[in-house]
Length: 137
Image (cartoon, rainbow, N blue to C red; front, top):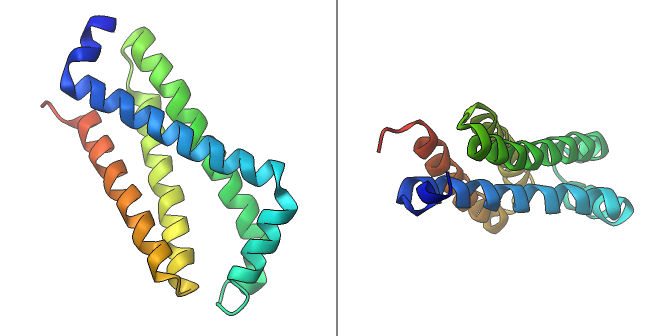
């Protein structure tokens, strides 16, 4: 399958999978490694929003979703390359979109509009990646 890497669609699919694997594995594992620092930041960030009372459980759920999304993108890419099966990679991109929607929702409720804007850019990249997995282009 190495020769197909030079097909632009396959290269874009591969690069997108690597992008989201890096993004969510780093983000999720950082939350695990520096739990206290991340928890304190999240609690402070959402203290004046409707999510203030659920910031800690929200962080647990977000951490699990991010790690799962990153792993599914990584393992999905390996399976896609090894056996040509795109299903796990598609699920990885879909879970990435769920994680991004969670982050976007939180940023909007915390009235962190620049933060929400940056997440919207990631969301657009993820939409494009998912489209490339399902398009005949």
